[in-house]
Image (cartoon, one colour):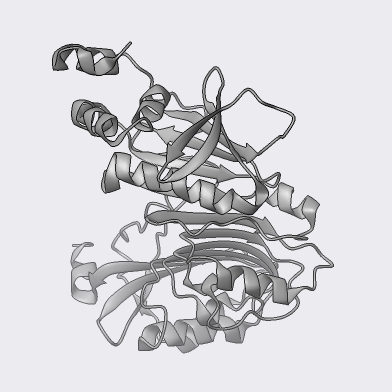
Length: 366
């Protein structure tokens, strides 16, 4: 069937009846076909919210299309897989070739998705070609995400190799990894973060980390960090973090580290972007350490407003917000008069920054 022989309305009806993966392959045929699909399917593409790449420890990469407003689950009806990217198996010949962004790539159609093949030396270039086609096809109206690894996957591999992170345009990157108890190759960790883009979110089991990261490491530039570590000073999140949200679970800490963090935030010296911090400690902190911070207090007769924010990224695939912080205690930043609520309960400290001056913050309780 030659599509171009039909009237434009018939062409549109035919294209409307095709699956997204079929439209994708048709777009490989020619620039004219790609232009036709983009012009006739514009309203349909508006339902696509994001494209997600998920690379596991076996080096397979799944590509999912999310047609809901928030990624809630891989099994959600709006979140469907449509491509698998794997290393070429030379014993298989049931594939066909297409020109994608100037690169000839081998494909095979499965029932629900297609398989894209690469030779190991061309892995990144194949993925870049696929991604560049998406950018040209869907444009920047949708979000693109790359998630690498699982804690279980990489703990089994014992970080013998770093998670695969290609350098792709207009993509938010997430990494979930683990350092074993006997891990000591800090050069490998430093090299990984140095070669990678800045992550939107990092989830790491760093119990095996025995040496500090470089203060300029991209690790500290991530928007969100969730980390399980032995000592609160390694990695030194409370000293060098430049992002928005951090959750720290540690076994050992020094009260002086907590005091230094609060003093530096209050002075405006550091943590300008921080909006939420949660520290889960191995033992209950002595709350009197707050006495030296010059805390301020909301009138006990008034009910404090609850501080909570959408999480930058939830690793369990759920729509989630940060823990609610309800506290009469707060501090004020000297440089811009911004307020942060402080709550200590049991072995946990919460710190939530308001986008409010002290006057605006107190008026919320009136």
